[in-house]
Length: 201
Image (cartoon, rainbow, N blue to C red; front, side):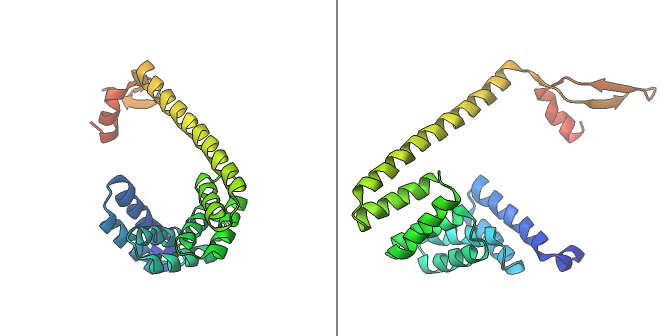
C-alpha cells in the first residue's frame, strides 16, 4: 500500500506486465483487458496501457474508443513509433487521409525502416494520392526489409538450436557444501539438472 501511495506507476507497471503475459502468452484477451483497464485507472498517463487498450479495442471493432485511446497515448508520448504507426493505420481505415499521412510520415521519421508504416503509407499513396510510382518503391523496399528481418530471425533460431545440440551442459557456478562444511564448486551443470537446481531439489 505504501508503494502504491508513493508512486502509482509501480503498480500500473505490474498490472501492465501481467496483462501482456495473459494476452501474448496465454491468449486470454478478457483477463488482459481487465488488467490493462485497472492499470490505466491507477495511472491514466501509462502510455503502454493506453496503447494496449487501443489495439484491443481496434481488434474488437470499437474504432471510436480505439481512436480516442491512441490519440491520448500519442499526445503523452509522441515518440513511440509503434503507437503513431497504428494510429496512422486507423486514421486511414476511417478515411482521415490527411491525418493518416501525417502520422505515417511521423512514424517513418522516428523509425525509417518501419515495415508496417512503409506498407501503410504505400497503400495510402497508391489509393488516395495517385502516386503509384512512389508507392511501388515503398512496397519493394518493405519486401527487402522483410526478407532481411526473416534472415536474421532464422539465423538466431539456428544459432540457438546449434547451441542446444552441441552442448549437454551449461557453464554455471553452483556452490554446495559437503558434510564437513567445505565448499564444492561445479561449473558444468547438465541441462536436465537445471530445473532441479532452480527448485532447490
